[in-house]
Length: 110
Image (cartoon, rainbow, N blue to C red; front, side):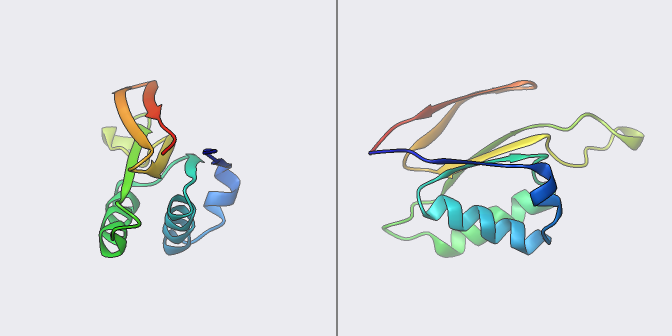
């Protein structure tokens, strides 16, 4: 089995509304792709993606695995969004280790 990845530029992500981003990511993952977003998602978008995913879980789609690098702290040390977000089908991707500047994941063909 082949595993496909979509690497999405920050410019493309920034041109979408929040709901368009979530639908784009979820549709890609449901198609079996690993989606990597430069610039990432905000914390709120990540929560909404999880909520949206949970409404679509079934026997054919067990859900997602998501990880990201945290943003550099901004004004008042508040985090705005992740610098990079990786989202993949739960059945093929498992995050093994996540640090500030490193994500290790196990990708397995079904």
